[in-house]
Image (cartoon, rainbow, N blue to C red; front, side):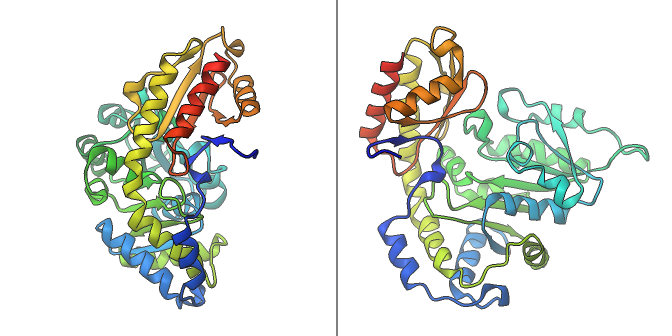
Amino acid sequence: MNHGTIDLRSDTVTRPSAAMRRAMAEAEVGDDVFGEDPTVRRLEERVAASLGMEAGLFVPSGTMGNQIALHLHGAPGAEVVCAESSHVVLYEMGAMAALSGLQPRLVDAPGGLLEADTLRASIPPLAPYRARPRILVIENTFNMAGGRVYDRARLDALLEVAAERELARHLDGARLLNAAVALEVDALHLVRGFDSVSVCLSKGLGAPIGSVLCGRADWIREAWRVRKMFGGGMRQVGVLAAAGLIAWDDGPAMLRRDHEHARRLAEGLAALDGWRCEPSTVETNIVLARLQPSLCGGEAARAVAALAEAGLLAIPTGLDEVRFVTHQDVGPEAISRALEILGRLA
């Protein structure tokens, strides 16, 4: 990446802070496969307590956290009920099928968020000739809807359907703290009623790696076993958990600024010829914008390549759609420069 390039591809590109690097260098460590890393234990306990859960498990990635949860909640041949463009379907490499023999039941979600009535109508009655739905996965915030947020009322309605159909309830909370900041509530307010939750430390919170999977204490003991089976057993990993502790404690305070930058970016895009963007739908740190045919032939890949040449990185999320993600390594000056580059392209 050239010096001065503005990277809005994802909030995963954040670099560990100086405080994180110091904590990593000084971390007290032990062999975590033997359960002997005290820094990992502190991270797991702190995150679980913050979310109102009994226990937590540090895992290398959000994908692993989700897949451990699906493996434990499901059974081979069963269905995972989720919105049609969920992360567990689009971006986890078919892992639910490959690792656990599960298949998705995709539910239409206009605007990106599930509706209780649609969910209820999408789950057929149990029958001996149909796969059994076993798990409901809700993703909050919802990546492919532009970081849209599930509020408590919508969650309650969806969880009621899950209870009616006897579904386990997993929350893919990769950006859960973004949702909590946007709604001005504690994160545990959005976790209530779920059997498990996976939260990422390596996105907007700024840690270099890792997620924490939380649930009941006995369930997490089983998750520990499955993590090892999936290749996620780690040794002196307290050097990473130390950065995760700082991310969990200090990172949420930075998210509001990221949301403000995203809205500013969306408003600027909406004012440019060749782009279609609705700022009112930008609730957190993700901006989705569509190209009109007058700009780069309406082709997102061409637009992204041209922007990269000019020093602005983004990713195409469709033939005519581009995603921009704000994060703590992008300040207000960088947003101004990004809008200048976008203006020149337009």
